[in-house]
Every structure is written in structure tokens, then in C-alpha cells.
Length: 251
Length: 223
Ligand code: HEM
Ligand code: FES
Image (cartoon, rainbow over all chains, first blue to last red; front, side, top):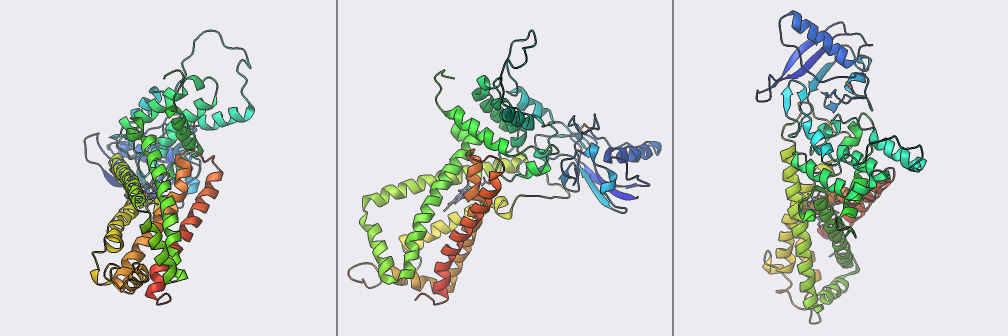
């Protein structure tokens, strides 16, 4: 099939960008979206032009590097799918496709479709961890964790940190991303000791990095390639309320 | 303190004050609906309110604080969120959010503008002195609130102002009445859909009841 692409091109962080139009010819329905872009790039390179820069790594939907807004939807219109797993059979011959980078103040554009997502790392570094002694591997079942709790934590841990939630949010809020880690760790015995400190530090980092505030639009959940639920945001809010209660330890 | 500066703290303040404002509009609506029981009913209600004396002032002070907190943080969060999302997409799509959720700050500001007008109209009674209860003949020694309200809403201009404000209130409530459940951390995932639906239903009931008052008077059903 043949497609018309409108792709955001921007030479560098300070440069002014604009949408450029390209023709993708003889696209196979079995190609992934990124493979289709690879071929467009081959043609650009052959004709001496600058190829379209985009982030990618695993190409199997687990690393969270790929990050493109396709026709107004982060990772495209197929539910629970990353761009690298989006296949061209989802499109029709003659389609016009708009490809844009994640847009948020906290995600400055580096080049074309590549944005700088260090702001997400800063949130994680502020509290998305547990402090523990290193050493021998603990015996199995040292910490008894009921199956529903383990499942809950695993559902939250599915976040691949791509940032689609922020790209979709009308407020560019990183609340779903932050809440997934807060909820995962707050549910588990290893995470509980630092729960109070964590929820405060991570939500503070979220604002400091320039993300917006959550106002319950739930666009994040709809865009998430891993189906992370907004129930984790409610859990974060609950953890925050708990952290405001007086503590006998005087934290 | 964190409550006044953090992202969750300010949302909690908005949710709690919003909920208390919902409490207020519930009581206010029940009082206002007494107009459908005739002149005596609403005039008696108005007299009860006046007889509360200093309590009325305590109540007004509390309301002022609620509005001040709710509006200050509402506008502040709105401005921060705009700043966090400066560039629009060439193709913009939303999947699940609603018109009412996207317009909260605007419907809120319409309600604020209306509130100021409403107080000038029915409490201070300066916008239409000719039909203000202070200038109407007393009935049984009390102010004739019923006649003031009826004569007001028979004026198309005044009725339209009220109708617009009540539609804004309806929109504000259709997001707000369920949103606090999430903000205060009470939702557990699947339950949120039912809560959202229930919130919309509540907003429709409030909206219709509030709209009925000026509409029925404008249509001369209540006179
Ligand atoms: C009778 C008057 C009002 C009532 C009953 C009311 C009620 C509510 C409720 C229940 C919420 C939900 C809080 C949450 O998300 O957890 C809310 C949110 C909000 N209100 Fe009001 N409100 C009123 C007036 C106003 C006014 C005058 C403004 C002026 C700006 C305003 C602006 C907002 C904003 C910006 C939000 C946040 C929306 C969001 O989080 O998406 N409200 N309101
Ligand atoms: S490239 Fe790794 S998730 Fe898409």
C-alpha cells in the first residue's frame, strides 16, 4: 500500500520545527510502523537528505523507548500497543498519517521525533526505589506476599516508562507514571518502610520537573500501551493522605 | 505546608471544598424549591433564614472561605497545567475525557460571575430596585420574597442569566460530583465507572431542579 506521511521535523532543541510530507511506497502490511519509517529513511539517505530521527530500542514492546503520536494518539490507534508493535495492516492504502513527538514542557524535543525524557528518571530517582542491604539472595517466601497483592503490584510494575500517559494528558501530568511506582512499592512489604517519604518526594519531583497536575481526565489510562489503571492514581492519593497523618516516628 | 503547595494536597483541598459547596447547593436547592409550594412557603423559608441572625454571618464567612480556597487553587492548577502543556498537536484527539472535565475552570468562573450578580440581585437587592423585596409591600409584616423572585424571572433578561448559570453549574457538577471520589483516593478501579455514571445522574437532577425555577416562572407556570 501507499501512504502519505506528515512528520514533525526539527533540527535541534532550539530550532523551529514543522510538519514535512513524505510518501511511503509499497508498504507491506506485515511491517511494523518503525520498519515502515526505516524504509522511508533509506530513501531519504539515498537521496542525500537527513533521515527522520526517532527513538527505539527493543522493538518488542518492553523497553518503552519508542514514542510517537500517530494521528493524535500516543503509539497510534491500536489499544495496548507500542509503536514498535503497531503493524501496517492497521492502516489502509492511501491513508494520511500524522507523526508527531510527545509534547510536554517537561519533554523538550531533541530532534524530530526524539524528546528528552530525563524528567521521568528524575521522578524515579526521587523515591522510586527501596533501600535494602545487598548480600545473599533471601530465601523464597521470606516475605509472605498474598497472591492478590503480588498481582496488584505486578499490574502496576508493568509500566515501561514510555511517557505515553503524559503525551495524552491535557495537563501533561505524569501522575499515572508516578502512581504506578508508588502503588507497586506501597503494596509490598519491601516498599512499606519508605512509603511516606516516597509519595511526598515523587509528587514533589513531578511538579519540579514541570509536569502538570492531575484533574481526572483519564486520558492516560486510555493511551497506556500496558493498560496501567487510574486506580493506581487513587492509591497514590490515598498514600498521600496517609503520609499527612502524624507519625509516631516523627518522619 | 504541603497541603497548600503540593500537587495532591491542593487537589484534596479542591475536592473537600467542592464537596462542601455541593452540600451548600443541596440545602439552597431544597429551600428554593419551596417556591413551588406557593408564596407562603418561600416567604416563611426566607423569614427563617433572616431570624438566624448572627448565625447567618458565620455561615457567610464559611462560604466565603470555601469559595476562596476552591477558586484560588482551581485557577492556580489551571494555569500550571496550561504551562505544562504549551504546544498543541497538529492532530488532537481525546478518548475518554468529557466536555465538562475540560471546561471546569470556565464553568467555575461563570458560576463565580453569576454568584456576584446573584448576591447583588437577591441579597443586596441593588440591580432591580423597583422589584426588590425592600421596596415591595410587606405581607403579614414580612418581606415578600415570592413576588420579588416571580417578578424578576418574568423579565426575560434576568431569567436568561440564571438559565445560563444553571447550565454552567450542571456542567461543573457532572465532572465534580464524581471526581472527588478519585481525588480522595476512594476509587478502586472498576467501581469508578459506576461512580462517574452516578455523579452525572446527580448533576442532571440538580441541573433540572435548578433550571426549573426560572423556567417555570418565565413560562408563567408559577405566578
Ligand atoms: C456552587 C459552586 C461550586 C461547586 C458546588 C463546585 C464543586 C466542585 C467539585 C465537587 C469539584 C471536584 C473536585 C475534585 O476534582 O476532586 C470541583 C472542581 C473544580 N472546581 Fe468547582 N465548584 C463550585 C464553584 C467553582 C467556582 C466558582 C470555580 C471558579 C474557578 C470552580 C473551579 C473548579 C475547578 C477548576 C475544579 C477542578 C477541576 C478538575 O480537577 O478537573 N468551582 N468543583
Ligand atoms: S522500541 Fe522498545 S517498546 Fe517500542
